[in-house]
Image (cartoon, rainbow, N blue to C red; front, side, top):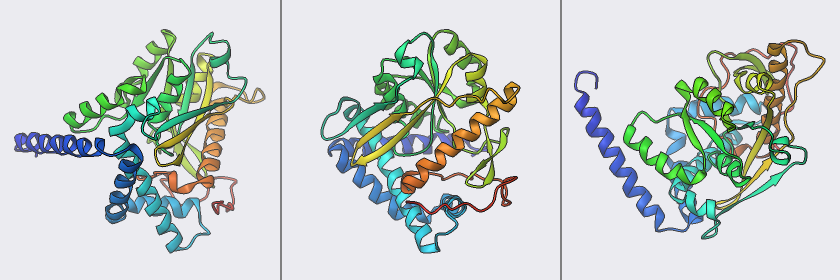
Length: 311
């Protein structure tokens, strides 16, 4: 590809045409049918992909009491949910507008300042659960201006198409690679920020997650502390077909007995990891963890084996 960049451009164009054809066909189906078709397809091919090595390892660490068949069942369920999410790009407008059997209901915990007094924005965060794209839509449904951080696709044609489908989510998009300066400008302009924060990052802090240290970003907590903003969790759960529930939980707050911004940020993001553990244990098949989450195999400091069998 480096020697003949035109080959890459041809392949990218071919991928973009395939996406147009696939999404065109999916639009002929009802949203739930499209999600079922995408889920079935990815369940057939996903477990054979190299990415599934990460899924198996991540699930084995999170649920050490499960045997190989049970882990494989979770891998299949994860790919099914991921395939449904991909197919639902073609129906984000139906989900946003509650059409054709699709929809998003929102549950809001009391005491969230960003919703009650609206005197300042908030930092919203979620994990790769359910259809995580809908977190931005849930914030927008509360009439909160929000800017979301996303990871652009290598293929610019595909990226433009997904950006067009995402337009119904009601958010601005900032690429992850150059997000910090634009995010600060967005906060200054009174816009809230939406982040996905369950992945391992290379320049984070080792914090416990399912009993092992996972490199975890401190950026959401540090932004909240430095700008006096709430750090608000959003859980997205698939109910049935293409119907979802978005639950806004009470903000994660700093422990006033912990001194210093960095230590408070560590404490807050440790609480965030615990929240993610609860969500994942409740419905592990809705978690897509196709990238490596843990860089090492030893337990976190001061942590013993956890009882991580899913309910």
